[in-house]
Image 1 (cartoon, rainbow, N blue to C red):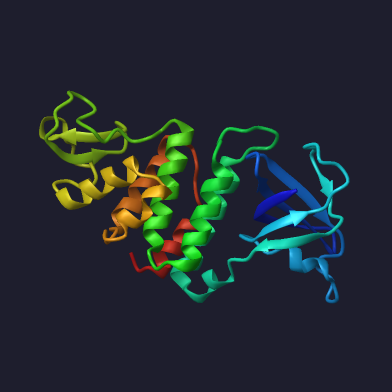
Image 2 (spheres, rainbow, N blue to C red):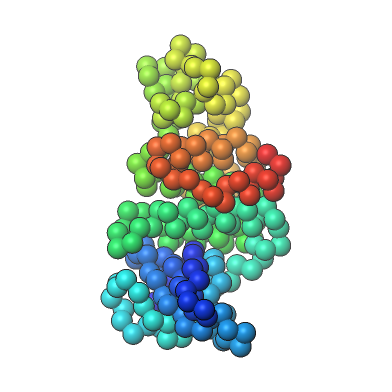
Length: 242
């Protein structure tokens, strides 16, 4: 069973429970006995963000599999070379955990998109672009995708800001004092591009210098409309001095 690990839980004195997403976009849990022992060989199969091919006694999706061995498919250890990459990495994994509910597929394409995000974070220096694209993907799958073609209130195409509460762009007539990105035309354009794009458009977007306010807006959308709070987000803001 091939899967990407996104969460690790201490269990008893020496055991670990790891959670991952498999190729069918299903959440899978494995109990790895003795993983925390100093001489454990199985700890090599517990690294978050890595892709593994696990052997288990039952290929059906059940609440918990018992780890029987495995092999490393792909490592993302170069993410650890940068604190900013680590901070974005933590947000990606936590968001994946919250998108992927137990015994419920609500996010088709999560495996592929998480895989692409981790590959790009490993190789590229566009950390905020990677995170922004993944957050946009999450908003889309949760059904809270921001409306970025015209004003959400009147269809006016002359946009001056982003209303988190209303769910998208607003014109001057419907602008309120707490709207985001007010009259910041370039950042509004960036926000629109990200919402229209996917990881397939990554190279075309690499020339953008992503403003952190875009990440902040996506985080607000996830929080207010998706009821998702990322505990790792505070570390990102601290590392980047945003």
